Length: 273
Image (tube, rainbow, N blue to C red):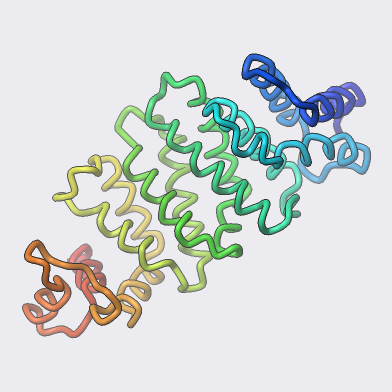
């Protein structure tokens, strides 16, 4: 149960946030303080805590903050909202349109994982771990955010390096695995393509640690990935991949193996030879 002092501090900060703040120098300390108050709250808040939380919960999803021109402010806003998602889980605190905006903001913040010296790095790691722990990533499936899911996978594979600590890599794996396992065999084709591309040693944009991560995710979700990669939706007739000469690569792979499976299916089978 949150103390009365924390509730009062949180409510005051939320009310201040609802007022026009002219400078980043005013906003960042206020958002940092709010995040620290939110971090002290447990899940399943009492009625009094919910009332104290309401001003901040509402102020954080205004256009003024969600689309603030300063990158550090946007990350600080995302960090506060991430805490609210944790506190209110499994209840969703916003309507569908707001949740899409919130999830887009959180995913965009994952760009900060690349530079461990970035001011926003530690906040982003906390958001990443929270998304994995409270399964907020599954909301992307409920809201049919296919492009956002694919973008998130891209960010993970293009960002992760051998200097990242195990908790970062583990959280990324957990999020991707959850999304695929909870997809009910409706994983976006572009997401599966991104996943399979990331185990390709010829993909110079992907690090060795990213390839290992992709392989572990595929192994954890083997049946779902297999079903998605061999479905009719991944056939060349629906816009399959092209080879270096502009022709459909799927046809070459299928003809050489004697199989009528898709390019993705061939690649998936190749992984486990």
